[in-house]
Length: 240
Image 1 (tube, rainbow, N blue to C red):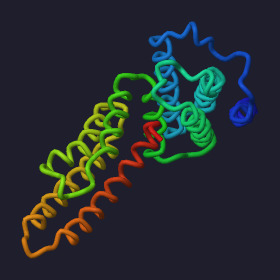
Image 2 (cartoon, rainbow, N blue to C red; image 1 turned 45 degrees about the vertical axis):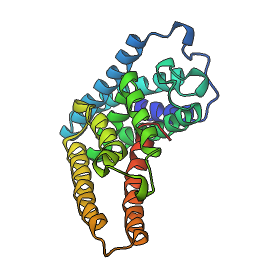
Image 3 (cartoon, helix red, strand yellow; image 1 turned 90 degrees about the vertical axis):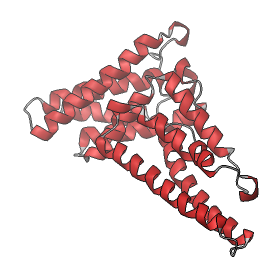
Image 4 (tube, helix red, strand yellow; image 1 turned 60 degrees about the vertical axis):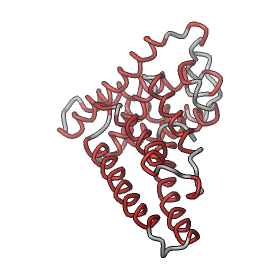
């Protein structure tokens, strides 16, 4: 019954106006905030292990997750109490994504979510701990947006792919222990596939029998496909 009450509170907080217990941003300390994020991650990991093992303390551990998440959301869930270290994230994106994160926590507490969903939940909280890395990642997303789309103006396709895809992928992989092995393998596979695709495209570029229009059309398909991958990453890492 206590857990059900906490879950109800978790749902209600997503629609409440900013609570009076919200953090005073003038007293914000990055180290304290990082520790708070790590504590929430630790609670989640312990609860996840307990759920999988059907441990008798599962409800207690889920209650700890619920309480800690509710406290976190009430302190930082609205744009006017967005943590200063997350200033790179647009306020409307912060508020929208924190609401969505609340739904994910609710699912974790109430349901048996799969490993990938749980790892993505942990990763999302981990994002908040490292301001510098998130700044670098958002910078790489911005650079990717500015990549040339006209093949007549691209001199080095390897450098183009490095800026467009490889650089963001490398920074994401720096999250290391916060990423599941499955997620890392997926990124390696995506990057490898596009490297091979671009190698084949470079042979097409060298083929004098192909028109510039045909080559541009093929390049556009490759570029759009990469953009779809980037869009997923940009959403996951609070860029858009």
